[in-house]
Length: 424
Image (cartoon, rainbow, N blue to C red):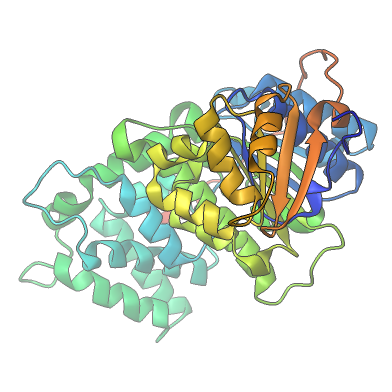
């Protein structure tokens, strides 16, 4: 165990699942991977529930060493003064945005079918019209549109004049049918019955500290542009609310990232250094978009690393998420297991059925230090490594971020001309 390859070549093993019940080795391994990625000039996207000081320091120092300080973007809703702006609903597909945003409607009224297809179709049609008209919008605008018939009518009139006969306008007319009264007018009470919960959630995301980050028509961070430009991004997507709805914002962020990668798969040239996406909290991955990200064809554009304490911890978040990770990740990295049963579980990934040496390998894993690990790629390439050798454990001073230069919008330059909102 003294001749361990510091990185064990795990960084080149495609999409990866890293399991560490103590998190010490996992953090050092990921820090080493991030440092190597930054020094190679590649794009980095780190997504977590909050900004962790040690991770932020790793990114700041990596950028300083590589002379890439200008590439760093930090989205931190907890500290708007030093955060860059980000609008996750601005550039994704209308259908994707609508399906994700509709999750915000609280299922409090059993008499209302919040899953009715028409409910989501109206939001999708509004977004399609906004994108067709090249009209920037935000969470706050979406919340206002679905509660203000006058705003929807004004948007329809704008699109009819600028893009007559367009598919987006036809989609909007069709989606509005269930919300018209006997006189053919858009009915406020019908809109309110379906969208009051959504409007409240969108206003929450578009005002206050969150609004300082998300309510932007010209955000600092556009994920597909950041990947092309090789930017280094640390994005905090916090839990909002309680229960199943708490991770809705994170689902929108993941969907936005999946759409960004999809742009490359659909025709962009693969970069010399594929982007590296790191999810520091597996709970934030509980979304079908993660399955899209972990597709094998994406590896030449972006490698995805998902870190978690254990398979059980992932399963507690979502059985589907665990199955996606196990079926789509090409590399697995296991740090020291806490129990014999966990070691035996890891062996199922490391040794083919009937293979020799299971007892000795289990003993080796149980004797690991906190930073030693064993990795397997493509089900057969097994390597041993030590994360400590890949990343110095020396203590670093906390990173100090400058206040970004904020872009202020001219009034009535986007969807605010219809909704009367105030973008930052």
